[in-house]
View 1 (tube, helix red, strand yellow):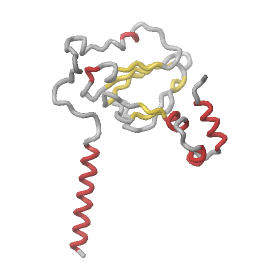
View 2 (cartoon, one colour):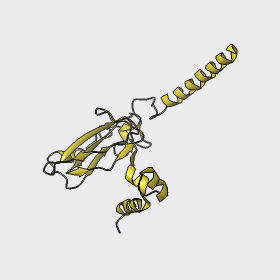
View 3 (cartoon, one colour):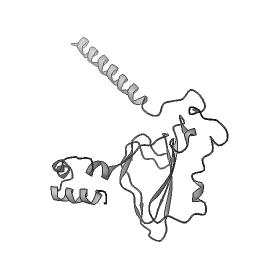
View 4 (tube, helix red, strand yellow):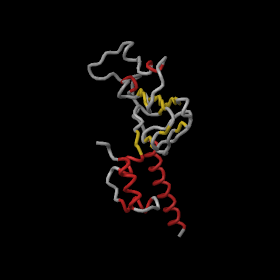
Length: 179
């Protein structure tokens, strides 16, 4: 009996070790050099300079929600650096609940995959947020779009949200693209 218990403990420890190793390997791949140069690219001061945020200086506040990004798509020098940034500008209102599938936010700790939103209750003063992500491509997933525009059965959503199918259909109609 003691031998069987020892064997079970050993296999439990072995399986746990493999699970931890798999979790530890998730994330952006590490690079073996200081930076990654795209094929046929040149490395000079322009490669390491991002000017996309300069429009913020002296600019008027936006009338609708606006995002300025410095991610791998906009700034190729971030390749392999496991970092990207976003500046969120919004007048009164809110952003849709969403999650970031590949990157947690840095200062205001929002962990990878945590559903969150931003809200500005003051209609007189626009809000500005600067986000730093622990990935070159944070991977935004909009929760309302994911839930209500991807073909999940209305009955499943009604049961999940403890409501009826008619309410789910009204929510879907509100999220449908405008013609």
